[in-house]
Amino acid sequence: MNPTNFIKKAILSEKAYAQMEKGIYTFLVDKAATKDQIARAIEKQFSVSVAKVNVLGKSFKKKRILRSRKEVKTGGGKKAIVWLGTGQSIAMLLPKTKESKAKIKKAKDRGLLGKIKKAKNKEEEER
View 1 (tube, rainbow, N blue to C red):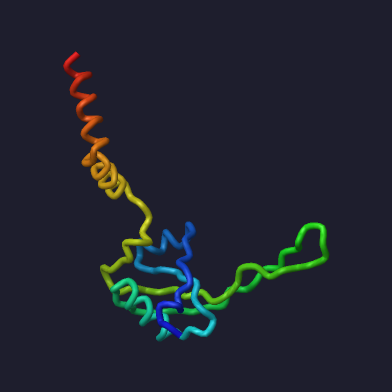
View 2 (cartoon, rainbow, N blue to C red):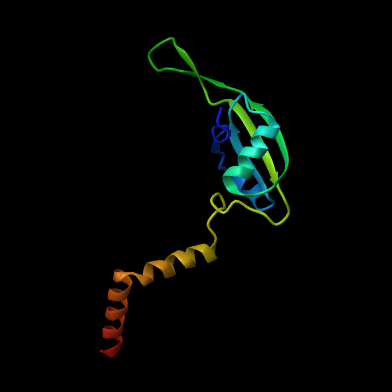
């Protein structure tokens, strides 16, 4: 199995965002993945050094389908909690801060629409 296929998705919740500030990230991973394989996959995919990995099973929940007697299992799988080395972070998963929003706003002002807005503002100031 390809090492990048071990990581299914990042778990993004309020608790996970609070832990991200401390350098702790949570991922849903393949059932067959080991701690060592998960660490190598995250190091390779995000170019960070992994200090520690904890793995735990996430139980399935039964959900009843409306107007039938059938029940299906949803959720579940294997969850990995990953500690990164000191001072490291995965920028792709970090929540947006005021600084990053300001950078995005500045980037929007650089394009053609930004120039049009600046021209309109100058015209209004002259009046």
